Every structure is written in structure tokens, then in C-alpha cells.
Length: 317
Image 1 (cartoon, one colour):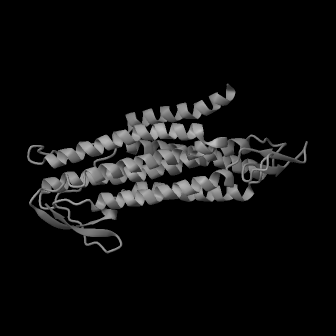
Image 2 (spheres, rainbow, N blue to C red):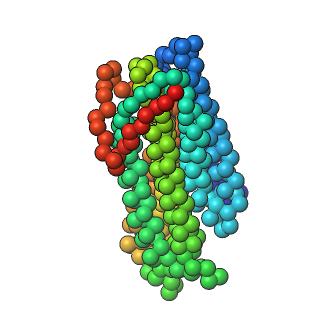
Image 3 (cartoon, rainbow, N blue to C red):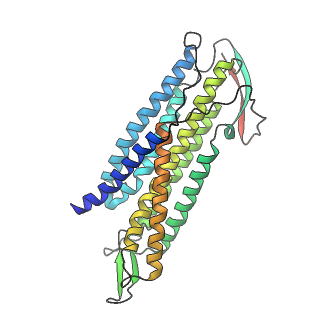
């Protein structure tokens, strides 16, 4: 019963933080108004991306719960944030593919240049990059100090020298190679999937001759790219929060008379990192639930793109 409460408490705290964040951070702004009779494709585009996002949120929650409950020895629990993020990216990708031609007017053609960086929110990129770097360092360190558990399974325990009262002690489960290798493989897969989704979103064709089409379509693209980055952020920050909090609590709980001081300091540091990651996780979930409009200012033109940063395409009716 106590173990179940220990796992339920962080979940309840996360739900409470998310509720407060949704109440306190009004991110969603209305999309640019569109004449649905004149541009039925734009109406379909907005509906398909909205439906895809909500279906992905529901499917991702189900997939994460299934992954957490089916993985052996906690592996599924460690992979749950990455599974959730992957489903979000697949939802964005599917919606963009289904709406591929909705921003084009039959019988017209447009030529324009679009770059990935014109649709990427810089703050969210920095958050995702920082979380990924910290997670990589932590998993690398945790793997380096990990050893086999009492059944000989490698990378599942941490053995330390006791200060007094015993020769050595063992902490487990520990996020060594038994957990970090599948986590790293899954996170790498999410990054590849995110790169594909962002590229498909930015290069989706449209007729750039109509200002109304450009205004609405740019907002839809920015929301899709933002959702993809937020999904990667959920995978990174969720993985970091879970592993850092659990590992930090075990190390900090050694007490002054059991484990070395260095391990206790590491434990309290990991608790701090885990709490920061939890806050970032809540923010990424808010971005997924309530994406910002982020429309470009009127008259803004996209600067020329290099072959490595964007693509030029001709939209044909």
C-alpha cells in the first residue's frame, strides 16, 4: 500500500501542477479568421490538425499506461514518457499528411521559400536541448557506476561502501545499462521521428498567392512544429524527472552513517534536477494542450533559404 502511494503521489502532484499551469498560463489565441465558403481547404486543415492533436493526446496517454504496466522490472515505466511523446509526433505527422493539399487552391500555383527555423520556437528548442544534455550526462554517469543486481543482471544496482555498520550496501533498481540502453534507443528514435515530422510540416505545399491562406497556414505550421518539439520535451523531461527523482531519493535516504557523503550530495542534487525537470515537463504538456498561435506579422517575408535549412517548392493545383 505504501509503495502504491509513493507512486501515486508524484502523479497527483503532476496533475495538480498541470491544472494550475493551464489556469495560470493562457497560451491559446484565436487563429486568423478564415472564410470557410471561399477556402474550404483551410477549414479542413484546421479541423484535421485539431482532431489529430486530441486523438494523439488520448492515444499517447493510453500507450504510456500500457507501456508502464507491461515492461519487465520497471523498463516499461522508464519508457512511458518516450512512448507518449512518440505518439504525439505520429499524430502531428498523420494530420499533416492527411491535410497535405488543403492549403492549395485548385488551378493555381505558388513559388515560395520556407525554412525550418522560421517555424521553430527558440525557447522551446533551448529547453529541449538542455533537458536532453542533462539526461545524457545523468544516464552516462548512472551507467558508469552501476553494477549487477543480486541475480546477476547487469546495470540494475549501485554498490557503495558503508561508512559504518557494514562493509558495503546495494541500491536498486538503479538506472544503469539495463534501463538506460533501451531508453537511449527509444529517445533516439523519437528524435528521428521528430525531424521527419518537422520536415513534412514545413515542406507541405500551399498556394502562397493568397494572403489569407498564408496567414492561416503559417499559424497551423507553427502549432504543428511546436507540438512536435513539446512532444520531444515530454520524452526528455519525463525520462529525466522519473529517473532523477527516484535515484535521488534513494541516495539522499542513505543517511550520514550509511553511505559516503559524495553519494548523499549527488542524491540531493538529483532531487533538485528532478524537480526542475518536473516543472519543465508540466510546461511541455501545457504547450501540447494549448499551443500558441504565433502568427507572423503582416507583410513579413521569409528570407532566402540555404539547401540545408529549408526547401523551395512549387505548389500546383
